Length: 131
Image (cartoon, rainbow, N blue to C red; front, side):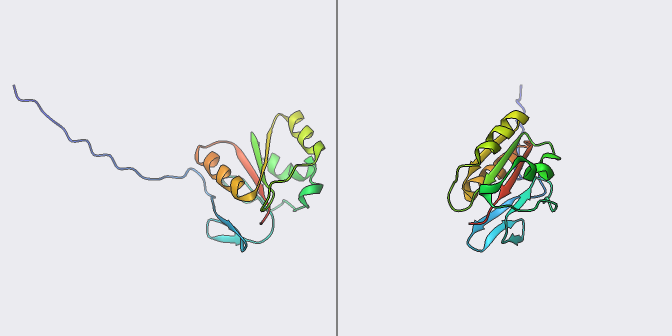
């Protein structure tokens, strides 16, 4: 009895389920896809939040996040620039009351984290301050 052998050929492709990805963070700004932004930005995996008005990080309140929260994220990542900073205390409490995760880190780490979570299809949003 002859045994039949089939060759399995797999083709791997990288499909990103997101429309936006952070491609780079450096002294020139934050590159989202092919566009470079010099100011602080807010985004979800699907869109830039153009209604978000940047405030200095140290002055952020929960109200500043309203345009992002309309997209119902489970986690908001804030990139604070070249160095990680502590968030305003009330901001941390406000997110805890809302049941939404808030992660604060330097912008390069925030960009990497955003890309990984967005690539996994997670409900994530980010505010990124330039370095």
